[in-house]
View 1: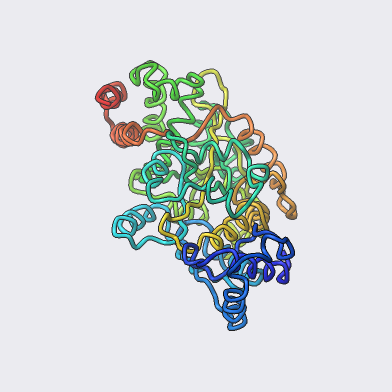
View 2: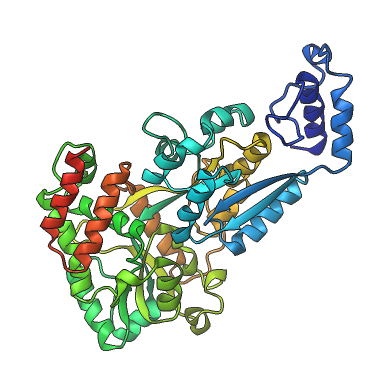
Length: 462
């Protein structure tokens, strides 16, 4: 929107309201009526407030929004925020990035003390349910400041950002799928592995060849509970499609055979040397990524579709790393099937959403930034960085394809995610936590069936 139009809207909004303190931005709402409408001219506040607002604008009054998240990355944020601020000189974004492994602990303390940011990143599922009480109803707020938004944003993504009681907790920003493997084709060739494994038998063969050549097969950040439970939900669908969602609804038992098989498959990844030694103590980011895969110590990296970027040799993330310096060919593919059927089924979901603090006093300005990230140039930048699949119905990948396996990886992973069996996140936080604890215990050698009895016990107690 041109600056003159914004100024006209600003003058009218000031004329139609006694105070803009509720938004605290010192700017007018973008959806205010045109200044030439008779109703606006009759406003009793027309003579006083516009002058004051114009004076404030002339003085260069700037609204500052605090924003906490793990995405965008530090490098991404420098360009995204600079571009937004250039287009919106009346708004400044004060961004604080924290690695996802530490983010929620920091956010919990701040929110509980009433010192949380205006905007904050969020995952769907149990975390969303927990933090929804701190957030505005995004649907109501978007309706006020961004008319027509529902036609712009993917409906399935919006549904995943909606709580059990029907509140839209935040606006989706990116869609992602689980579970995938980033792979180093150069090291695979060195080890005599002709193709990315698609069955467990092929994965076992790849693990042996990797070990014989001094490499880790799959590096996994199994210290991260979110990775583990994502893997469980995804893989359980391969043993019985949809069973995990039925169990969450209480329609079947967590001790059923398909879940025992899933837990046993998880344990096999540790006991048979598929994962790196000590995986339970390795975080996904930055440890598994940087110290193993980017350092050329592992052939495969357990991750999600959001990590397609390194399939491009010019991707900034791998510049200066060992795989970047060596010019290794990088690709991404679905995680091999762990079931005898050989079927590979993804789960998908909103990778990151943005919530607005209910105490935010700058809602109009905050919604402008949210629109930029979800449906504007910020969304386009993210999609072109292969950070995730777009939530905007108007945006598709328009970046260059310069990697040997880049287009193949984009097509293969997007098709995998498109045909996902269901959501990658469970909504019940107690069940999700119980599964995560059980997976840690199973990885350490506990009996899968016994651990699932504990999960069922927690479900029965609800």
